[in-house]
Amino acid sequence: MELLLTGSTGFVGRNLLLRLASDPSWSRIILPVRDPGKLRSQLAGEGIADDGRLVICRVSGDFWELPPGIAPDLVIHAAGLLFGRRKEDYFGTNVEGSLRLVSQLPRTARVIVLSSLAAGGPTPHNADARGIHHEDLPVSLYGASKLTMEKELRNRLGRRLLILRPPMVLGPRDAATLPLFHMAAGPIRIKPGFAPKHYSWIDVGDLCSAILAAAKAAIPDWQQHGPFYLGSEQLITDSELIETAAGAINARGVTLSVPQVAIRLASLVIDAVPAWRAAAPSLGRDRVREILPSRWVSDGRPFAEHFGWCHRRALAETLAETAAWLKGQGKLRQG
Image 1 (cartoon, helix red, strand yellow):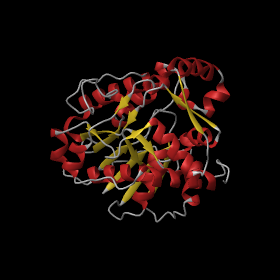
Image 2 (tube, rainbow, N blue to C red):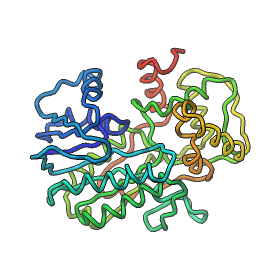
Image 3 (cartoon, helix red, strand yellow):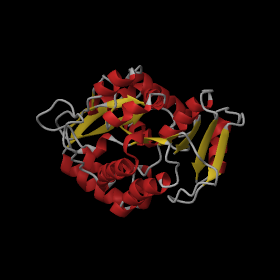
Image 4 (cartoon, helix red, strand yellow):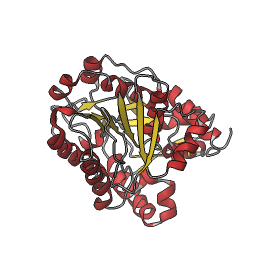
């Protein structure tokens, strides 16, 4: 069976590729990337030798011009823009780019698209967890672009499409968690708002297992269900996330709650300075809209029951592994 994976140099896609490379179920793994050299360097760094199944092809921007003869049985679309400044940036990549990709696929190809809890929005005020029966109400441009992508792809692909909506994803090979560890290492750690915020989350290895469980499921199941929310059964608070990150690097400090208006003002400054925006992309003006709600909890039980999947990793284990990877990359000082 031939598989096409997008986003193989990114966080989730990179972890997923490592799983796929060791799974003989796939006769060919097609990897369209903007920078083939970067991918080859990453594979070499992971000790992955090309056994002839990897087909690396260069694409330009978000146009996804695939080489002739590419006809995968399954596509896992993990690429997308996480951090941007303008609506056009998010929609150009997450919506138009996705539509260009699927327009080149054979009509028999199944497609798993990695969306986000942000497409649904925060947990409704009258619910403990967001489920697929709740109205989608994204609060950010990122979430709105993911929701629009889902709708457009469903119109194009119908029963061949499966949409997965993971919550916060944590784990090794994610440089975006570096600001979290830098803050945890300091004497003063900043928590937005005075009330605790509750979150669903998922370890990247568990997410990869979930994606592969869906990939090997029978196609008739896809047309009757979804989009599916995913996540660990272990809910966390914002304070627990900060304290666990500190514990992973043996740091000591004090967590200080600050008014949410201060976070809003800081995001305006960060968004205006390119160097600061690159250092802390999750604190840009658009993504801060997702920090303000007090509950981002989703119900992942339908996916777990339907595909026979369960989470295995605890937060402390995941953040310890993430910190070790960041240190190994020279991105985080050895403590």
